[in-house]
Image 1 (tube, rainbow, N blue to C red):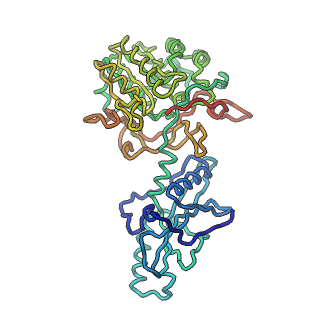
Image 2 (image 1 turned 135 degrees about the vertical axis):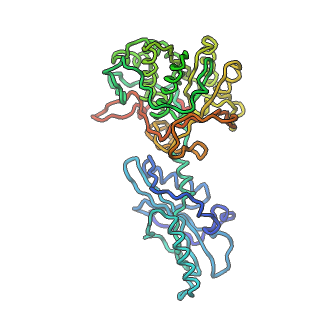
Image 3 (image 1 turned 120 degrees about the vertical axis):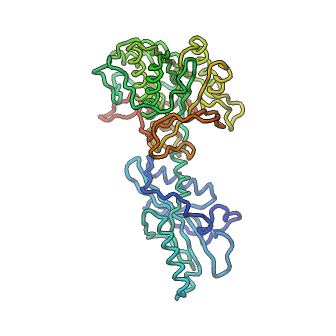
Length: 488
């Protein structure tokens, strides 16, 4: 690719796209202590960065043979002749692995005055040295700008790490809603079953309840319904759910675990719960239920979710009143899916008014208030609140630290891809270091209809239960050909 550079490209409104370096209170930035490694290929990360610049009406150029991008230049503010300043962005990418990349974004400043003044007065030198010392504190990795194109009549005098823009890239790559894929074909053979961490030697052992969960006691009451939101496709959420089931049974409650599995699979779940949990029992569950053998697997059919079902079976086998409820739809989407999900849970609740019910579903599903982007969309949680006025319903969002998740998403080319991705929390749900795993209830429901937050710590991805071995390698069923319908 040839280089094409435009000197001082100006456009109406460009000054509003970014501020002068001195206009930002950079001293308030939280400095990272290590580089962020994105769990996406380098070309995808760079293309996402390019789209961010193009959304801001910059022209973007690529340095041939290098993983580097440059933008067109702009003049922040209005400057006098012979004392003009221009800025442009410089992006340097590096591949750490096949699906691991580092992207560093810098803002480069070119100043006309530095070119015109050959012998700078002492007061100007002192000011420049102070500024360089300050700006050096803001770049936690020293980078030289070899190969940066010159601008005729201007000298590149500053290069500063642009952390706010890197955070926008982070949000594009890691704060992305997961897709729940309904429908689609099943083609994975049961003989390829590989359950992560499965322990077949002691199926009659007691449930592995894990570490205590603070703050859950106020939720444990007969007839109450607790809805817990994303993120599925992780180990931590099913582990926290297991602990909640254990706590509920210790309170002598009859317990039901509701999962986003098609309701037609209820007989297969019931058979497994009544079994002894041996290998043939597990295989029978996966044979009878096509949900675990879909070509495209999302986080609802992870190994951690199957282990959660196994812990429910063990609790039941040791004399506790525990059942698992499949309440999802196998094909519906949008409001029709919310209606079907609600219908199944409402029917179960009316038939079992005294059971303590724990339901896991996506963030949007469990909200007990309407969503802001679609006035006609009625979430599952809101439907339960209206249909069960005498049965208290509490919805919990999940707080966590950055980690990984197995999920399905649209990639930068607008194709569905299911894989392990990094997942970063928003500022609102970010779990601070040192915060224990716990439930924190709010004094009043949030604007999204959540009644509290379940903190689960740093996330670790849990892959699909069924994996397909192909040519000596193992890959997820999610990477096959047939594409089902995505749901948020």
